[in-house]
Image (cartoon, rainbow, N blue to C red):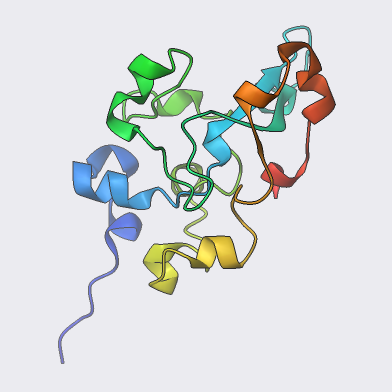
Length: 155
């Protein structure tokens, strides 16, 4: 009888993963594409002073949760933060459900994650993505962002 090998995300740290493994962790929830506000005067934990809005980057594909220009997003949207193996210490802006954050915190993947369920649509079918919940940045006045603060990305 041969021993079954554990999945790579249970065997490796995020910094040990190769590019394909790293990219496959993204669940395409779109929550990282949401505009976030931070209260610089908040004396609480940094994560507690990040407020999610239901306003999404204009590159967000509302049908599948992907970025419409993933490889050029940092050029097209200079405020886009690219999560890498080198900036994992600054992930408090990612939602608690994010696979990268969950792995880093030792919480494993959710049942709806495509690497567990085998289906990339499970995240959307279970209501764990931004699809159907957002408005595009181009349609919202910057002065109205506070009116768009939502709690659902924290679930």
